[in-house]
Image (cartoon, rainbow, N blue to C red; front, top):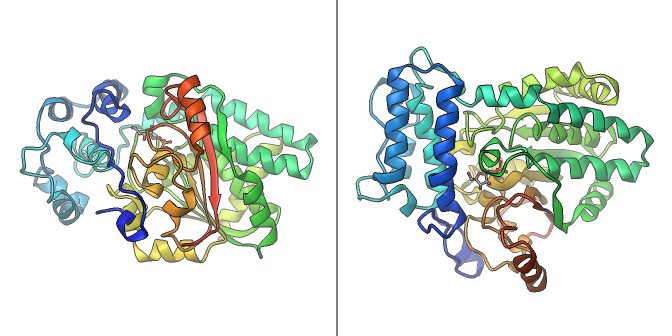
Length: 401
Ligand SMILES: O=P(O)(O)OC[C@@]1(O)O[C@H](CO)[C@@H](O)[C@@H]1O
């Protein structure tokens, strides 16, 4: 699936792969994934069949060649044999290493294969989220406590300060990516290098309120501020309803599925103070249909959002705003390529038919919408700014190409 770069007259830009040891993506397969395998093995009492399959997958990704999904009952139960046969046709059976193919594709396929290795689709381990224990720890942990307590500070703020606080909390929440924490450790403060938040609020205040879409990212610490933003938009009359897009399967370690949203909502409604009040309003918005959860299969496919199915494109076209959370959604939104940093965000998102915002902590090489001078200063002062998770962007455009 190619980007629409040529047809949009954008510069040709190299597709990110994990082949070069000097680049970030290489470390994902060689440092992050081995730690992830270890974590999954320790988190759940998998038996020899699953442990062996996990071991074989790890070896294949490090030293072997890209193999198709194992045929059999498990694949039949997963129901995605035809898709992966088609999606893998350019790569399977050609002696390619995992690191030779586009990083967006290989990483997504990696999570699909990991689910198969753990027996996620058939048999006694069916439906058991291999990342469930890590997500549960996140939900029960101190970071969520801190976020719930911090929400109480909204009480003393002006309306504009509240707007700012709820939006910026969503960016800070994006540091809470369990995959990322396998390497980077606990979250630290983020420094915003692009902040279009004033334009987002101006847009929401000027437009007739309508539906807002939120393409969610991680569960627990990240989904909490995301859902509180949705609640805030509806309660303050900036949105009449919201659709929250979640993942249909375990993905990228801590990506939120419906069950994670439910677990979070249950924790939120039980919270004391303002956060609990907001949680109970949000619960009501779910039950009266103003907030809807969707988990389309597309969100676990290995493609960028240029390949969105028509119904998601239409949902973006009819929304007053679609918010894309996090680094992976950013890569899929603008295209996982080494774009020149000055490429306008609006040019790369202009294929979508509605206003778009990205709230993203920088955790991969992709960076756009900056000035040459800003990028040069970052390169000089913090050479790892693109992927260390200490810098972030709030980018927005209502310009359509
Ligand atoms: O989408 P998220 O949760 O913000 O980040 C996902 C992420 O950790 O996974 C990829 C590497 O595994 C990177 O693109 C990115 O840093």
